[in-house]
Image (spheres, rainbow, N blue to C red):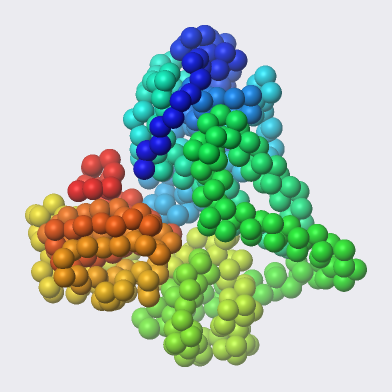
Length: 452
């Protein structure tokens, strides 16, 4: 979706002389970018340093930030895009909280941008490293795409997801996020009103429930801090977790030696922790598969329930240890086999037949069901249709669709799509399959997968 509207007649004179960046600013921005790159502690080259957002466009206001992005290739940082992306969001959050840099009253916001990302060509992007425009903005109109909105919202989603009520600095973090969200929206409304990137990002966060979660957590923390018992409980919290952590490590190690059904139960449990819902029957099956293993912790299957003690411990460990991601319980060669098979099908070099699709469905743990993501959110699904029509109404996340003809589309929530084929295989664009989708995009070398 592209939104266009009237803008200011000049670029921000605090930064620009006409359409030229002030010479001294280029030196200063490169110095800051180098310091941020060193702070990232990654083993890959800087591909570019860019200014993006309202400060590189004609929709700036007195509230605008300076979005300074250090461009690197995420694939050279690590193979798991979910971990790499969360690492970059965490580094951004820590840097911006500990390095409150400003220039003439404008916040300088640093971020490590993936070079594989693609913004709409009309969004203003200035290369500080090269001293020239990559995409020059239009003085009369500005276009903003969904990617720009999502990129603006992503860091806030990560920060809110990472908030823990037990964090000793939780009140300070909530206050910081709240202030920055207020500033984000005000800057957008002042610049372009209802349809600014900043305001649309704020609405995106509100519609997905992040704003409400932040408010509820703030209220809960405030009420909790007034209880006398809180101080007494905090004394033993660290010691209790340290003792339980060792048991969890033993439990995870034991899980890797179990049969495939038990490993699949672990995958389903970790998916629940990542935000996917399990039905009552699925919870029953998970407990049945894991009942023997939980005895290693001296627990009963009651611990394997929403809010159960084992689920809570794994949720905390999942944020700290990449080895207990769902993908850690699946064979690496399986994902490679799936990716290569799908590439062969999409390029028509080796189209998948009925047997090949059955193999893909089995390896991904998928299901065949016309209701797809409605009944199986976050799980790969094969959708049999009569006319190739797919609706994303009521689906919370994007889905990559591939039909039997090799036609491929990245489908967005609340939209309808048409495929030439009659059977559409859906890969949810969630943390579990983010790496696979990224590898498909890069190996197909088309710079994006919105359409085949």
